[in-house]
Length: 71
Image (tube, rainbow, N blue to C red; front, side, top):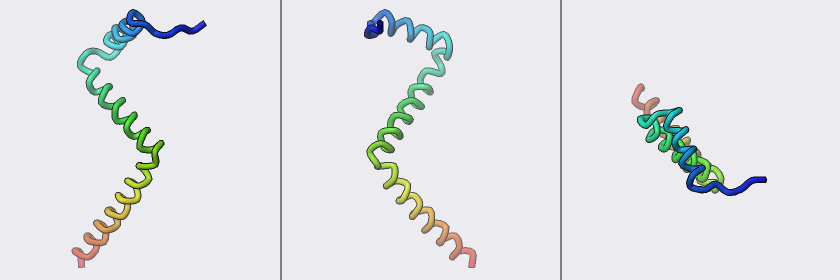
C-alpha cells in the first residue's frame, strides 16, 4: 500500500513548499525546525533538565544580587 519516497516525490514536495511559503521564508523555517529538533533531543536525553536547574540557580543568584543592590 505504501511505498518509499523517491526523488520525484521529494522534488514535488519541495516545489509545493516553495509555492506555499516562498523562497524568503525557507531559511527561517529551516532554522526553526533545527531548533525544535535540538530541543527535542535535549529533552529526550535529559540534558534539558540539567539546563533548567542551572538556569534557575543562576536566576536565583541574580535576583539576590538585585535585592542586595537596592538596600
